[in-house]
Image (cartoon, rainbow, N blue to C red; front, side, top):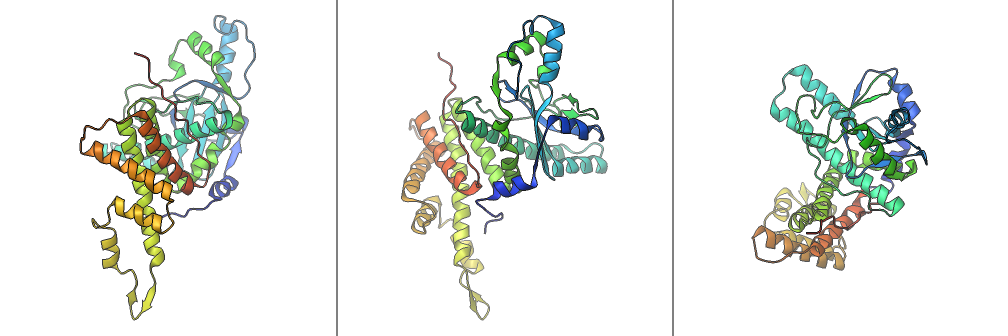
Amino acid sequence: MRDEPTRDSEAEHVAAKGETVTAAAVQASAGEAPKRHYIGFFMSRHFWLGPRPESVPGVIDDPAIRTPFLARSREVGFAWNDAELEICVRRDGLVMLRVESLERGIADDRAADPSPSIDAMLSRWQEYLEHSTCLALILLSCVYRHTNIALFTLFPLTNREVFRPTIDGAGRVEMGGTSLDGFSGIYHVAFDLMDPRVTAAQLFMAQQLDVSTVAEVGPQMAVARARPLLRRRLATLSRALGEYQLGNASLAILLSWFVIEDIANERWMDWIEGKDADLGGGRRRINSDRRDKMKGRDYPASVVTNLLELADRLSLDQLKTIDTVRSWRNAIAHQEKKPLSSENAATAISAALELVREDCGFPLDLPLGLMVPVM
């Protein structure tokens, strides 16, 4: 049985509980609180969020002009929060995420053991990285849907790409290091570490985005936060798209198949549970033995997807595409010498995306362009 509800209006429901706040409100609330920790990352391309001066002569070479310009770039341009999530985006494109339950877990780990085990830290990292990867996909989708510009490519977010910024009592963002309370990374691409002239030039020429472009990010991320299966699928789809954009067709197909198979299995178990009934006398139509058999090896993905089509849980076109993607997955798994193209990968991602859209309750639009350098 599905372990989480699917509701067509779930994004709207969560949006009603969340709150979009201004940068000034972030500063005001921060003034009354100690430092708050976040996970931060930059997308693949720079952008400027919100209004930007149209013409600033000397912004690159004149420190008197450059310094206030850069100070403005480090303001929080968008913030959204509910009881569990807080999302902030600086004007220079820094994305910051705070998950209250994970922060409490990190604090509890430290309280129980000042030197927590590597497994404990890895567990927190994995959860935060899954949230961050999911957030990157949602941000990409919102920007693409509102601007029709494929501004970003996706890349795997690891401890090399994310870091631990804080917002202090005055509302200032401090970049911090690449550690999640002790787990060191290799590097992070923080503007604060660059030559200020380079930073100013990049920001002045970067794509400008209206704040309304990212307004849906918070409510959509809240839906993903509340539904772990959806969040895992979105993160996997994000990785599939990233591999596709880099030209790695085989890995993109495999990751897309993971999403397809996961959704098919969930729909299959939902259908089985929907057929269960009390027959009286302590008997049930779907008893444990029958349920275990229908979940076992006698019902592989090829059988399950065909039965789902007959049960009207998949369309015939979806079944045909899934069968094709499954054949590609098998060719990869069995190391068959079968050439797979970027077009095959795009088909696999589109199939996974269609199934995710049907279940997530909010719009999801992804560009399928490639970012491969000319040789």
